[in-house]
Length: 307
Image (cartoon, rainbow, N blue to C red; front, top):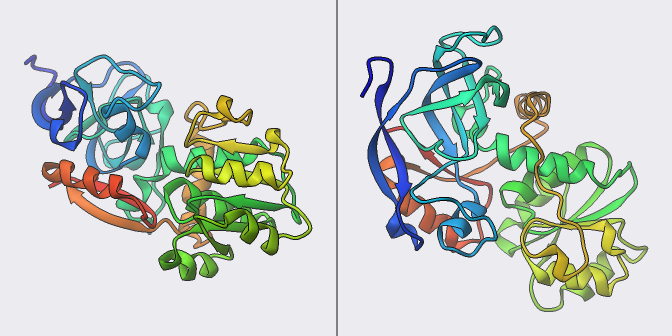
């Protein structure tokens, strides 16, 4: 270990498999270089795609060993040359390609944003990937007040944020979810519809004048129902399954965009956007965190925290 680096624990895996392949290992984190910050980890949001990659069920393949985690929040503990926008002690959140689930996170300053006062770090930790994914997907459809959209898995990490963003823009939102989440959806201005068998008929009854666009976070069930109802394929967006198999769109998050992160955090701060935390686990219990995530039927984000 060099004098400029610091010891850290990091969640990694060396083989494809279930949550049991996850290990909390000792690594070293370098001093921040040009344009970088080093953040003392406070919390990090789990994402379903990370579980799919680890299990070998994604088209995304990463070289082993894989350092786990993309979303994070924490406090800046060191800044590299050329960083003028952040200082030691700033509360920030952001996203990196991998390796965010560690005691210390090294990241380009260009992929982090400040956490506003009053926004818990656990909540901020789920905004950089899930939040911007929702934002970018919604932006891709050029919607306006009065449009009618369907959001599947509408109480989940991405779906819950996307639905609320749309409501704030005056769009009518129908959200599919389990019955246990219907009351929360109503509280956020989203009209709940039960997923599962009979979905097409329930959607037709709820929106008899038609559906403008569909945002899928669940899988083929939602896409097939939308196509059967005559929603044009180009107006259906999925991040949950192979879009090409259904001839629909696949717009997820683009490059990390700090102004979007600032806007999302501001919406949380003023109460427009509610990001529920389904459960929190310390880094040492990251296996249990992924087991909980992969069981499904969640409201909001699963988060790992510093010890």
